[in-house]
Amino acid sequence: MGNCIEKPAPPPPQPPPTANTDTTVTTIAAAGTVIVKLRGPASSPLTLYLRIALSYKPLTLRFIDTPRELYALETLDDAVSGSAESILEYAESRFPRPPLLARGRGKGWDEEGGMVGPMVVRMGRLQHRSMRRHVERVVEWGAEVAARGGKMVGKVEATPRVEVRRFAKRYGMLLDVLLEHAQMEERVVFPVIQGSDPGVCMSANEEHGRDLPIMNGIKEAIKSIVAIDPGTPDFREALNDLSSRLETLQENCKKHFEEEEKYVFPLMETADDTSEQEKRMLIQCIDLMPGTHSHLFSFFIEGLLPHEAMQYLDLLLNYNDQERTAQMFRALIE
Image 1 (cartoon, rainbow, N blue to C red):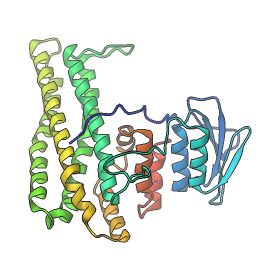
Image 2 (tube, rainbow, N blue to C red; image 1 turned 45 degrees about the vertical axis):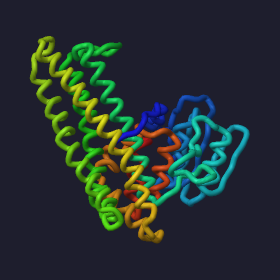
Image 3 (cartoon, helix red, strand yellow; image 1 turned 30 degrees about the horizontal axis):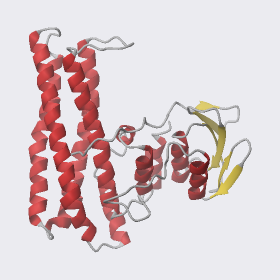
């Protein structure tokens, strides 16, 4: 379940909002000295979408709640108003780094560099990218902590047990996303391709069955490590074993994701679905991944490059519950 790893950019700056003297104004301080004001209705998913986009940029954002669905962006020497799309395009031209409207090449992209394919396929590709990067991070952690016997290196002091518990929490979040992704595919994606190529569907299901014991085994191995006396040969041996298990998971993830993108997604792309059918399938996918799209959403988005994160948010704007969409988006800025 993963491909060749691209080094993701740091996640968008998300410090806690600080109240301004005007109660309708919220300031989000980013890594920049340029002050930008954004006006729009606070509860609108599109407003939150723009606030997330601007949080990636090197600026200090001051948000001003307005009652109408009208958006405006103001800097010291310029201002623009209009649709959310026009605001984002202006911000992209004024603050080009990091790019949020980045274009790609090859499979999954059109001649103009836009992401193409059914919405479920686009969502699946982006989920693969996030998960494979998170898997890479836990593999790196496993190798590092095994090499130093569980001790924390750096400014923050921690006992080996504390270090392992921290990792257990992080791995637990990844495991939940992986399991929800697998369930979503088994309930939505695989039934669509069953009639086109039962062999591909069977192979993908078998890989899910193969990886589940490995993923759960890692979880149990982490629990057992916490109970072992740090500094003993057994503790170091358990850490080395955990590191090896994580590497196996990474190899399996890589192979599984590559095969899905090579064989499963193209079958999805040949399905003659209407736009309404596509939208219903997308809603199903979101509903079957409740943790990923609620308390794990910030964690999931951390695995995406800025432009990929915005592509994922674009897909979520098609969800049928605007309040839930707003809750997801709000988690990234609060």
